[in-house]
Image (tube, rainbow, N blue to C red):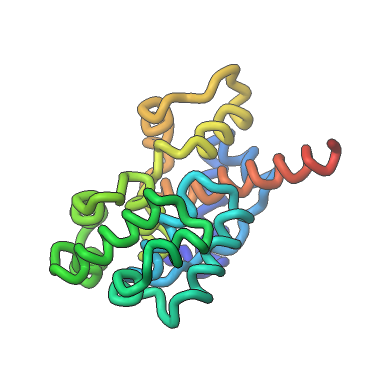
Length: 212
């Protein structure tokens, strides 16, 4: 499955919607937007770290400042920059430490992005999460949007849980374990399902804000 190709992505969304009413509602609300294609390697993982637990707008502002500060977002550039300069971009102390931790892992060879790219999903996730500052969510989002893997699923994401709650008309958000169990029916396109759920949630929130 080529998730970068919009026709292929729409075909996958159609197949999911045919067998899952939750995904059918997601497509009805949010459509099938193009796949987000992040850079591979350190820049892509660094961007994912910056975007953790932030609204898209706030994260985009901080990321643009990081790109303006550094000539190239690379391990050597991050290690050469001062913590004060990186904090000045709006990064938290923890995120600065995580960006440096990943940079050090690349420099030492503990993290090899070419090896990650050639590994299967589980092996790639294991290598990424072995680095301090890279949790399961970060690893899965990197695999989705930098390596374009169609079946990873960041089941700990609160946005996905909220989207599922709304679309399935539940009173409470499913737990990460419950969401992972629900996602079994979406194999081998769980990342596509996540993409559709996020899209529907964003559209719903924008509509609610417009009415407020």
